[in-house]
Image 1 (cartoon, rainbow, N blue to C red):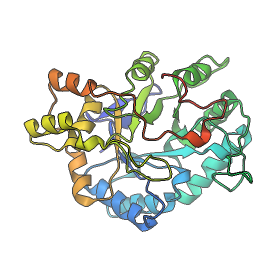
Image 2: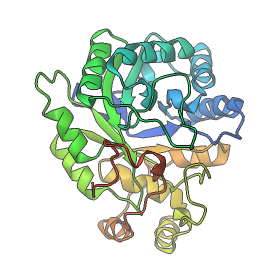
Image 3: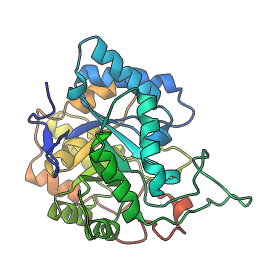
Image 4: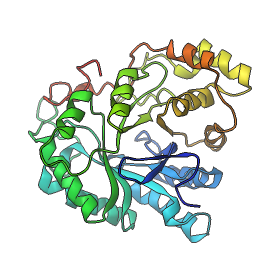
Length: 324
């Protein structure tokens, strides 16, 4: 089965992206082998869109799972949509292609389906993913993201990736890329935190107007990794309105939160390493939320971010100071 089926969206470059993806990020204390097991389970239940990143440090395991599933005949390579991301330490244009080539070596794949800028805040190049100074502050780098983008365009032309996009960009940063003289390819997507407590309605409207797909991460709230998320953050899946809507449809609140995104034209990533949850997260295509349900969920928005990324806040390209 190819990617051009009813549960896919056509990107602005003509390729197709499944509207429901499997997220592979995990807290540091989770063994990397868990990512491989979970990815195999996800492919077995029907996920065909796998979202990973260099910074997750588990691409070897995730791609081993994909290759195993190709080897046993479950899926063909062209039936999988695989995303990797360019980390902040590789945003200098001359570092972009080597970073993607390194990911491809880890993956043992000839190409990825999507290569995106993970975060717009460049940090000091090198092997250290989070380069800190003596006082524990992140060491920033100064990079023109338009030049970074040109390097991504060259990766697409070289056949190393089918599509290119961005993540954690606000509308001003997107406009900077879109208005770049000599732009060859628009970003196909902008992957951002998006859930009923942060529904990104303005950014979604902006992206739709530019034919850019919004991809939602932390769509179920967050796994509450203490390195990134405040301990007292609200628990989305315990929300009474979400639970009431779920009960009415004979579903769980996670399925409602995922279905909500698909119905508003958002591609949504679901992350779980639990077999029962992985199965449930895929079962969102056989029910529909009513307009009243959608309105009620829209009403939950409180512009609350789980992933605040404050460690990057002093960077000139920090994306979260602006409203959207």
